[in-house]
Length: 410
Image 1 (cartoon, rainbow, N blue to C red):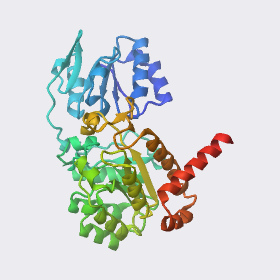
Image 2: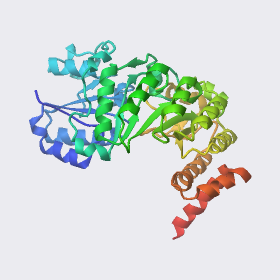
Image 3: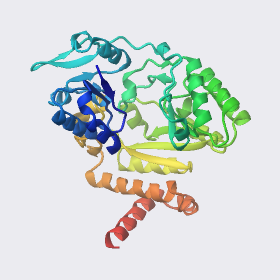
Image 4: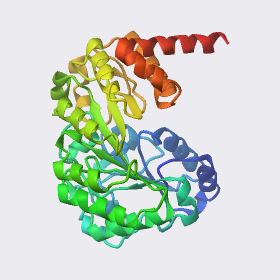
């Protein structure tokens, strides 16, 4: 059996290569996410048009939940639900006998069958694995390199798919370090994808020490952390040993409104988060995130969150808009809160009982202004001054309105 497995993103180059050679493959497999599902389905139709006998296997978060419409497509034959390692291995072993494959949704004539789920994958099997072994080492320096040391998240934020797996599991430590060393030797920017990197104090400090022992000039390391639980020993270690701006911390504040936080099963102390940021911002570059559109977060609440977080003057501040990802509790509760969202990926909020379409449009314009002037480093001193004397929220809305009109009539 010949199997072609697609990467995360369907580029035109990959699409052309695939379609030119589609006749030689028995099965073509794709990993599906919100950012590639639309393009992937377009390619699937083309594959089936060229060779109806080629079987299509899909996996990934975008098809692991609410998959009924996807498996109903004529161009889709199989879907792997959830973690794919065990099921994909079984698929390769047992094909063309889908009834023997765990976690598989498949068609038996007009009937759709769902096999029993595979047991949780043992991450110890990643021992001696090297994710970048198929990449050209000379090209890695021009890319952001991603590494994941664990799976799962201890929190239950209802807008996040990670909340569905509350058992945090770690990859083998030796394998993590071998991969990390290879990335440091051949790349520059290394981003850790762990949902909360600082859950375990000793593990966090151990990885920090390994980085300090092996990093090269030009390396930068980004971590997603939960600031209000950052252990004092980690803070002390950073103060004493970590060079300035070697680390970047991405901190998801999401909202300052505690009622909105609790409504999505999220607990966070903004006061503690602020304290940690101020203790470390001279050593660590900060990237702060907010989410617009959560239940109980009204216009004035969002205004307050944006103004309070902006006062921290992080080099990057990102405004995201609530998305209703398949499988997440917030999607299942949409009707309860009057949420309306785009039915197409990435399923972004349109309006709710708390924000009108017009209010969301204004905040979208504000986000453009934030990107242009603050994150784009075009007026940082002016904006710092404005923050101390006026409402930065209203100034950003006004900036973007003026900018939009200038573009419109230029």
